[in-house]
Length: 319
Image (cartoon, rainbow, N blue to C red; front, side):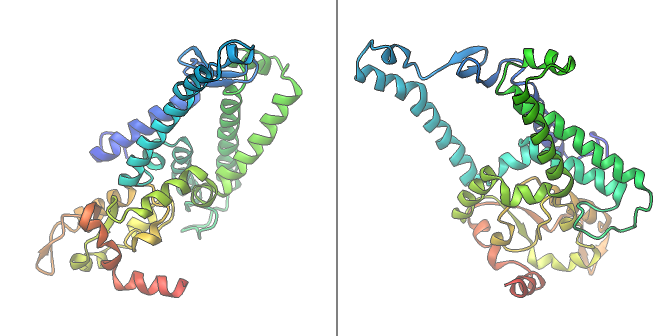
């Protein structure tokens, strides 16, 4: 699907994800943000950012002024960021994951690539058609390895001066420490991207789990809700919303079953497509609106009560 054909919501999400991914890659090279281990402090927008305790460590100044400096340079900015981020997460859930996170962008990219070339979204699912040719497998694997190397080098550039890393890499003169980092990180990311992309997002990412815990504590937070009275329209759909979910979740289920939902809206896009096909009369009703949607406040509190019977039966079997 071309960019122009995507829903407005998905166009905005594509722009935010792409912009943040480029920022993630280019930030250290543009001195927007990085931790320079050779200098021993952060670089933010080209300026050194330290705790401001150099004079105190050299025996100049008193403890009171050092405390004020520590509060203004570290504690208050960090606390302010945590409070603002926490409020957004409390209200909207893992919105960072679905709309900004560079790793989740890679998850969706390789999901689409594997579906196109291997007829499955992950290796743990049954392929719709078996791929007998080895070329698609090699293409996907080496694409994962290439992206893994880009990630490894980008992370290394956050720690060491990138303007020195690039010439050393091109000339084959990297020191043993950075070389070992690139080898180990590239290997780990290759395994992650090829085998366990969404599994890492579900169980291995501390930032993601932290967001999920805050989101689950707010019963009025934004969540995908199922319009149970219009469940009859699902009989004309082969679980397209579930198939579209990058996290492989059951989107029509209760909230606690969607603990790792990233609010990406892919399930909504899939439902839109299905209901557009059902735009004619279905049992005397019009099926031109999706049966799942984002809701908040009191409607969000009802999500656990409005799950269809077939989803509740599935959950009971799992328990």
